[in-house]
Amino acid sequence: MLPAKPFSYPGIDGDIARLSKLLAIGLQTATWNPPESPAILNLACGRADETGTLLSHLAPTASRLFYLGIDLRAPEINEARSRWIPTAPLGWDLDFRVGDASRTDRMKQLPPFDFIFIRHQNFWNDAPIWTDLYANALAALKPNGLLAITSYFDREHALATACLKQLGAELLTSIRHPESRPLTDAPGKSVDRHLAIFKR
Image 1 (cartoon, helix red, strand yellow):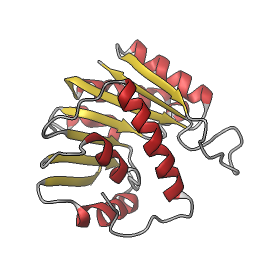
Image 2 (cartoon, rainbow, N blue to C red):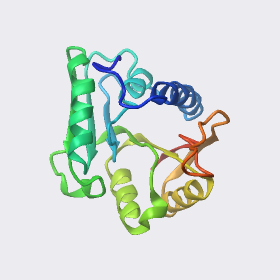
Image 3 (cartoon, rainbow, N blue to C red):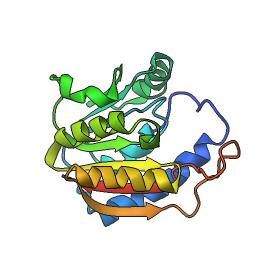
Image 4 (cartoon, rainbow, N blue to C red):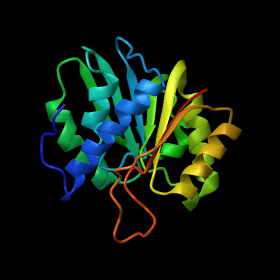
């Protein structure tokens, strides 16, 4: 799925291409079997730059699907809407909403999801909030659904993985990306350095 307009910053295209390779390996290792009509949730999604590559991997042949991105920041959600909704194929229901991604337990209208994605999770910044977010995400999964996270740095990834295990998640795969792009303004961090995939 191609974006309706270019990404906002130089280098994002390359980051998404690298994420695509990482997802391909992770989903194969976790034995993802695309449902006929998948429901996919992208939590704390920001501009949701990864939407196209997510849908290419998660629903390569789906004629119908539901995809929802949730983030607190209205400008980022508006940008995601303008980039992805205009190019959605007929039968694909794409939506981006302003909301608190840690409180999906209060969003009673949401369906159960086949796949939940959290890119560059931020556990180190506010552990209690992210613990709630993870717990609610796990509860929102279908019985065979998968939860995937990526992380900027090693310690953060270890903390998030430990938290999810304590919440009852089973780690299916954890991959350190050898080609992740270092962030020059944040030593020790790189884009999508780690990917982990869990099930309930």
